[in-house]
Length: 172
Image (cartoon, rainbow, N blue to C red; front, top):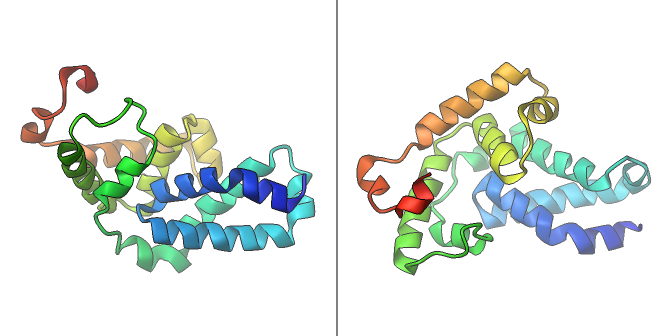
């Protein structure tokens, strides 16, 4: 597979992944663009890997976690409507206004997380990776992954008044 074929086929997926990591579509585009520029130069070696897509996704994660992007992560804006743009696994939002409010609250809470905590949640719940795989990607122990996840989830817990807005079938 050529680099151009890979980039055309995987660009939407890489952008969605980066948007979930960064919380900002513009920053996600910057991250993916930078990663793809570096990947093109190294494409022969990347293409020989067991999974070129996994390799490039790791490059996206590393770019997000890098110190060069730390200033941007601290300035994540509330983008509730952008969260709705992501494929909603529940089959859609019942009330658009309610969905925007809930998404805005979630993005605000996600913005308070540290980069590694946010990365752990994205890798666990968006990428569906287990603790061992996440630990390998982040270069830490499984216990550290569980600690990051626990602290992040504690930060994200919804207040009682917001829990009343969530339909019963979605609480479980």
